[in-house]
Image (tube, rainbow, N blue to C red; front, top):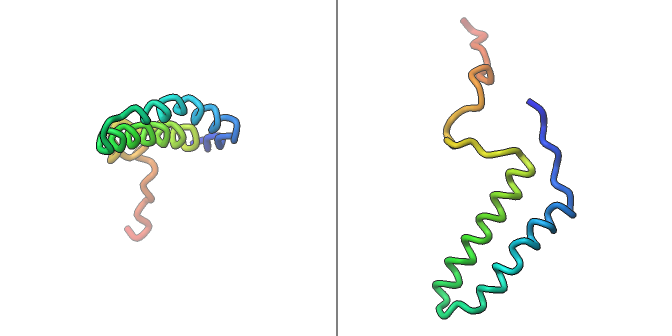
Length: 77
């Protein structure tokens, strides 16, 4: 499997800039609970995008192995 190319600083800043207006819009929230809920959603989405750019797309099932050949053969048989 090929190792994905690491994200550059410019790519990260471009992703963060896309979320800047969303973060500024949080200042209009009336309660801290609403602010916190929206803030968490924005950061989770940004974190997912950064992770996918650095390690590749996430699988649909987080528990599924990538392939069957990745298991080390039993050398003691």
